[in-house]
Image 1 (spheres, rainbow, N blue to C red):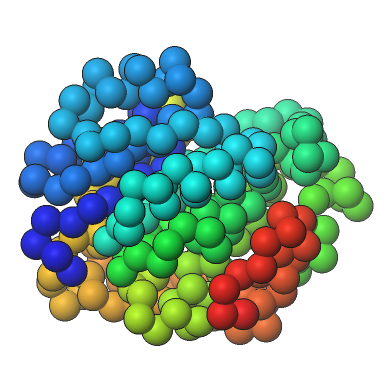
Image 2 (image 1 turned 180 degrees about the horizontal axis):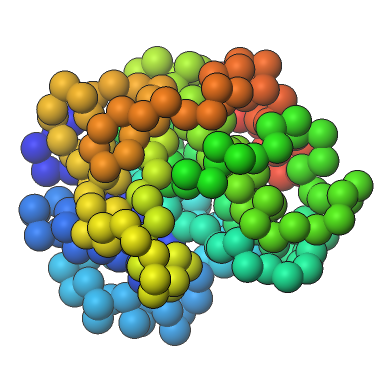
Length: 261
């Protein structure tokens, strides 16, 4: 890892993404932010004035996600991509986007898949998961919730399970890339709510640490972390056929093949 890294962070207009950006900027790294629209981009430029740039695109639209990848690639190769963007678990019904895909799936699962597939391969990939991924249905036979009655929390948990699958698949298929997943803990962000019990500062530190640390523990690949320590993920995330199945389905939904698969 370079001493001063170039880092792109999705969903960095607020919450943990913005906090991680500020940490990395304060350490002298070159950080490119992401916001879903121009209004949010203007706000985050003020909130993180040391950022190198900000790209714009709404991940509820696969087309805009592709545009974000193109914007990032025009800026040159990055050392680190942090996949932080996500929507939460409180959607009371199955909301679908213009692409006719569930809102939570297209943002939390399909967007990081598309970005991973299209952005010039970095040295390091970091994916934010959640402790809720342990309770996820791992079957992958109804990713779009067309057969089951909608459960917002369960749908969110499944997407966080998917993020670990993508991280581990990238680690396996791209041995020259460090690719890991983490859970930040249940922290009092806008998503987590004010009564969340975990340490908010510690919640953003692991992604920043994985991005740039040269500590031996941070230089592993295909691992799952919690508060800068290794943690055992859901055992099915290690299932290679499960990883490949998710990549294949995301490839069908997006029309974009995962390189190396």
